[in-house]
Image (cartoon, rainbow, N blue to C red):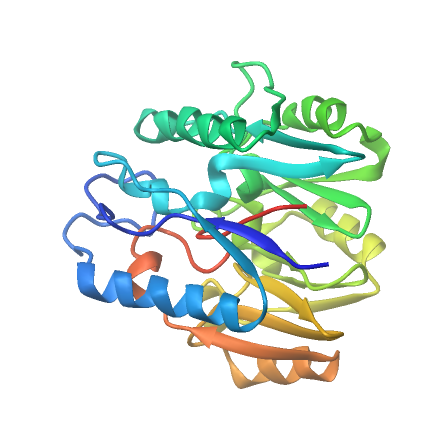
Length: 276
């Protein structure tokens, strides 16, 4: 199955406010570098056989480049469905309506969750095999789990909810990455004991990222399978130890410079909304 993703070119990307610890208005984005990094990611996807769609960035919405937070597009039977995000911060709320309009025009059925439930798209909803992983505590509400189960048409008991404990790793996709149904990379410092127990109970192979890896948001990655070969696309700067562990489990690693996008608190996965 060909992976399909939605990305948003950084036409108006900049850091002009602070809604996570990575952001600093005194550390401005270099526009040319951001565009070069984005294009490098796009080329990497295309070379790996990924179908890449683009949504234009609207001026005044600098964080729209982090397309993973738009919501969750998926196929259920013969239906294409999109669940729009409910953002916590006012600075990002308009992104949800733009994404909803985009998917509606593409023929997707829209399934909203209640407006009083904060949930920030694939930032806090990942999938490993048939298991959905929901992050909460920093930018999404715990009660999003039940609302999402209804719209995904799955049972809550088949979902894992993980409380995030670190401000720097505010979405679950910044601290955990399923590589396949049985393998996961995690930042163990981003979860409490209960969460770590859930992770170890669910996955046979748990790879722990180092402090160096976490400093470059190594867990914020995307896995692409092509001709039975699995490639991890992640930000440049991860440790050799992490590369070796991933390769030992059958994954090749492709690093993409993400310096400019880390200034806003994201890396490869944050820029990538995956279709399921």
